[in-house]
Image (cartoon, rainbow, N blue to C red; front, side, top):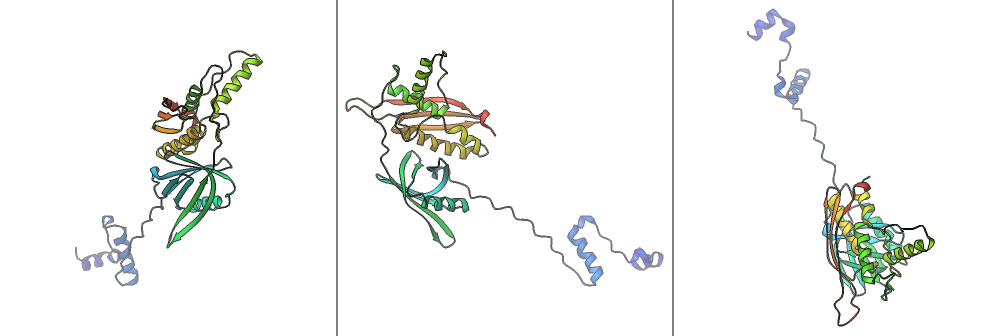
Length: 296
């Protein structure tokens, strides 16, 4: 049927424009606009929404952990770390406003103690410099920490027949596996006092940090949504506690592996050498920390 035949039999239908949906909505809209305006129209599809910018991925092996005097534990990605005998120089990435706020907070806290951890190196001291350095559109944070004597008591004591090295092993198991001493067996006051004293010896006497519990469960509450980040931060926090609770002098091995909500721990650390002719003791801890009950 020709256009003239259609117009003769149905004038109304002859004035319509036929289109197939298979041609796509853009062509259909363009054809309608052409009929209305009398000129060919090109209708561009609306721009697709660009994805929300994501936070730059964090290089987990470049993380630095900071413990502020307030007790707040923060982590940040470093660009460069230089450890010295008298402290540590850190260049931090400023990915967002929170990183810049951390630098400003450190610059106002020069009189307060801060602890910095990178890999297996721990520095305790005061911030001698904290500032933001800008280069074009990029900015970094420069932090310098001057170390101070930790005043740890190197003359450790035994308690109730338990040697200092065994107490240190119990301390390591508390830090890494959240193991606490079993409750005292009787209700006597003497037994309660002995149990409390033993708990203090396990936590550590006259040390910069006391191992009253493990830092790992609280970190899991905060970071369980990012398992890789949790493991990296938990390792740094464990290094800090093991070092500053006078548990070990050197970290020889610290492997943390998360399977589901089970954290598998494999640790070896060297105690402080006390005698020239005797090798320093090695503490080893292997076990699994169940984190299921700490899920928020």
